[in-house]
Image (tube, rainbow over all chains, first blue to last red; front, side, top):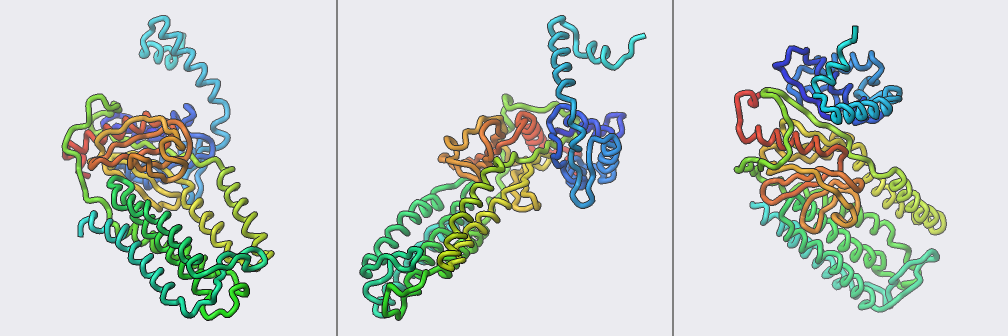
Length: 117
Length: 326
């Protein structure tokens, strides 16, 4: 999985890390039971404080996405990967349809994130 | 001492000396050996005997056939696989020398060749010694001298759009070899060695399944990581470790790996072109061209991301900014 962070972004760093892991799991890039890098290694690679990574990992555990084991690090929770396959199909279909209609990705994103009144 | 000298000394001179010493020792033992000698052991003990020549000649020919290609590879291979080839050559020569000496030593001062017991302990010792000597030679062969790339990463190499000051890490498990393979290998080895142990009491043969099992264990649970430092492969226990610094990446690309065709099999392999391969399955892989003509191939899923990030960090390593100093 790819975890990219931008220290210049107004989003908190732990949230950026959590968002990247979340995206990887939903995309099926990290399979159930797969071990994530140790918090210390990830912090070192991203030039972050280890607590920032641990904060992200704990949030993801609370969401049920990760299992945290003492001494064994974090693994993708087996229950977390359940029904994303259909969501992925729908997203792919939506993108294809938007492309066919010439709708810009930004418009599509707005359609998905902004609630209709 | 240059790496080249070390490769010649450890990969060619050492094997020649070890094998030469083994043959001389066996020749010097000739007066103390029975005539005929035991040549082959079956389940019921010695099942074939022959003259001194029948004993030494096939062993010498077999040693040469096994060790010569290894010596040539140790001296010729320059790239990422150099250390491994030197270790392989030293280890092979140690094993063959151990076998030649061991199979002869058990017959010293024997009066009846057919009564000589199986040379189990010497064979097990020879195998263990080859692992130790091979490991030592690999270590002594020395790490490559730093060779930072001087040219920019080619423009056509894939990149990742990473904001200025942004950091990224790409990490993935090295796909495991289908679990049936290690199970089948161990089962097969136990299926041969346990009956042999029960029938003949030669439990020393268990050294093979144990060694192969240890090797398979070391090869499991590997992780591949790309970050600002470059590419790193790590074993499940954090060891062994293989690292390509970002500054030594010429370019990274996605490739299709055909294990048999490209590397002659699975595992940590060397291709015919001298590329080092971490090959656990067929299909998508990351191919890294490293300075000094070295090439590394790793089978991983989503290698596109890995290649793009590696090229991006290689770009950054070429233009050090104050940000990268930390």
